[in-house]
Length: 300
Image 1 (cartoon, rainbow, N blue to C red):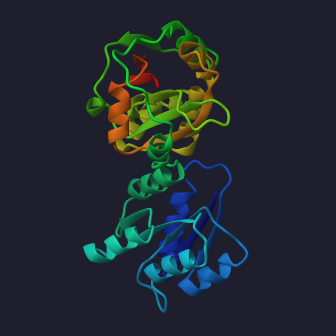
Image 2: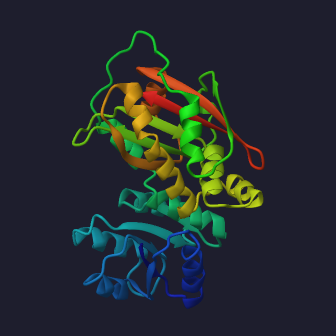
Image 3: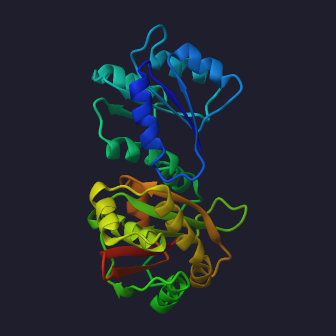
């Protein structure tokens, strides 16, 4: 993962660098620039995944840097602001120009870490995937999919995970703890969404943390801060991928996990899918040292 930090304070650069090094990414390449002009020079032969820039710097402002980068056709680079700028008009202008987040100084470690992880884990990708998918056919009455809870337990046992999984009545989306990890299942080459699996914050932190051999204190701290580091998120994605065979058999379609996303807020299409689907199964997942979480499988 490549990061470019643009700030005229070397002290702030060092603080941001330390936070980025603790996001959980195994391979990180970090570069710094003291001005917008210096940043543009770096971008001539190197492209980061994310730029974190100040707003007020000598010469070019952070907003002008953002606008210049877009004018140069570099639309794949994500850009966030870490700044003292608090004017609603200016911040709105930043978002209109494509800023993925604005974190105000002074900031705390978890606030910036969560902003970065939310962007890199593609918080908006799920909504885009659902919105552009083939439309859902109307369903007269949702049928519970033939998903065996023992099969999920068997999948977890392969990672030496000991927990209790039980089927439960459908849970309303507004009662699911945010953020949640969602997996999308599709057939190869198809834009249609065959199924969706949703893990609430507790389930994601507990399951991903258990695979990562985290202590109960580490898991509880992640739940409290609403933060999934890279290792935990990747473990959740691996679990979602392992469910592909079971979900394919339940849906009758040869699908596989096509993408996973960290979703910060519910949206209309997700509400529609939760209530209008070809089958739904909800489960509680409990870990003795961690607590309880929630998993839902939706066939579309």
